[in-house]
Structure formats: C-alpha cells, structure tokens
Image (cartoon, rainbow, N blue to C red):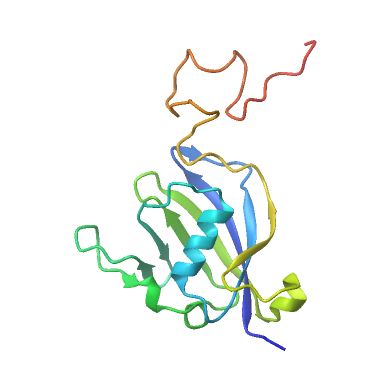
Length: 173
C-alpha cells in the first residue's frame, strides 16, 4: 500500500482580464515525492495551457513563494524544482497558483485530503500529479475563440449575439 498522497482542489478564479463567475476546477492527485514544479506543470495541462513558457508561481498565506527564480523579476522566490509536495502542502491549507504573471491566471488551491492511497483514488500510481475530477469551461489563455482568432476584441469577428464560447441566443427567439 502506497500512502501519503494529497487531493488538491484547484479553481481558476481570473486571468487575461476575465473574472470568472462560474469557476472551472480540477481535483489533482499529488504524490509527496512530486515537486511543486511537477504540480505546476500538471495544473497547466489540466487547464489547457499550450504556451507554457510564461513565468508562474505558488503563493502561500505565510508569504512563501515558489517558482522559477528570476533575478530580474520581483522579490526572491524559492526554487520549486527543489521543493517536494510532501514538505510544502498541509491539509486544509489554501494557496494560490499564478500562471503567466502578465495575464495573471489566478488559481485558488486548497489541500482537501492527505495520506491518500493513489491506487484507491485513481486505480493507478501516477508518475506525476494528475487530475482525477473536473468541471467547467476553461477559457483559452489568449482569449482566442477559433483557429485564426487574434484574441483581441474585434467587432468584425464572430457572429452577432455570440458570447466568447461561440454560443448564441436560442433559435427562433
């Protein structure tokens, strides 16, 4: 039996100029040996990030910040490649993951459960953090709605009455 894993709830709150009323989310299964870099990569994949070269970081309420150290950007940050989830995460502890410090894709995270057996939770023992449950519509990281869309607010693009998901008013109204 393998124990010591975490269930972490991750909800996308805002980013790219959007504040989401209906927040998409994922429950991530994270092993104690996984690094916070592993968790960041798993969150990016779970939230459909495809341009993953942007700076990102974890912020904890006590002031700890983990990410890729960059002497040219902001205050010092702890190297997340050297920090294991087992030493950083605690049950009931909230924290924030921010992807793309320019567009500020902000994710509220909460450690829901600890000391889990991954085989009982997911039927496998994953080699990296994985989503095991999810919900909601995930916006494109650049606000693009279709292939060829610039992501900019252009009144010439899109059909009248469509929202950002390409969903228009009901037919016959």
